[in-house]
Amino acid sequence: MAEFKGLIFDCDGVIAETEADGHSVAFNKVFNEENLGIEWDIETYGEKLKIAGGKERMRTIFTTSKLTRNIGDIDEYIKKLHKRKTDIYMELIEQGKLPGRQGVKRLVQEAYQKCIKLAIGSTSNERGVNLLARNVLGEQVYGYFETILAGDIVSRKKPDPEIYLLAAHKLGLKPEECCVVEDTENGLKAAKAAGMKCIVTRSRYSKDEEFSQADLIVNSLGEGSDRVNIDTIASFFQDK
Figure 1 (spheres, rainbow, N blue to C red):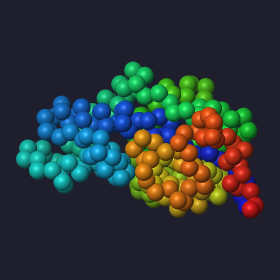
Figure 2: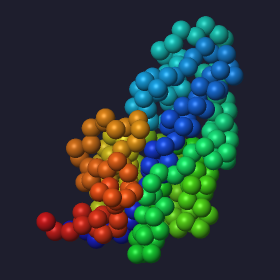
Figure 3: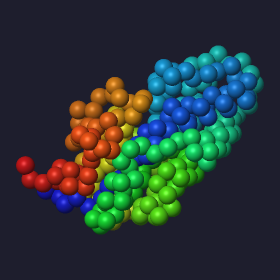
């Protein structure tokens, strides 16, 4: 069996409950600013989350809605909308409206103290991932990550394993030496396709998804029966 050497975190839903409190709010605000007559309610946004990537989710409003406005080049318009949506999301982070999930900061600190290499692998906007990690974890703990991969750094989104394979490469590790912390079925599939162990910490939108492939499923990384520590993760790598 491989030795546990690397811990890779997803961002949205793992470091903070960003979807309900951040991204969905920002999407709806930009739709309102553009007078598109669209609002994603809780159920609709839950369906959109099955699609990896914000720009990809936005594209569905042009394929499933009857928008009659002349918007010109759809690709350029989506880029414009997504940039504005990202700016709104950043404001929410800076205003402290997206607190960190229980246990994340502690687990990062524990991993660093035990010389486990750390990375973040997300298909979300690069600015948003870095700002969220800084604000939630603090500058010192943010600095423990050897690499933070986000945005369009990969060509294929989860459930494709590309983001996690790249993270392992950047850490100088083999995929089988890494464990991923995820909150979605697509993320779990990506981690497993990369040949990695995976802990699923259920988030508000993902709690009913299918996680049978996970090495461990918890409601948070925090305290009590859900508390996850480095020794817990290391046990996944031991001979059975």
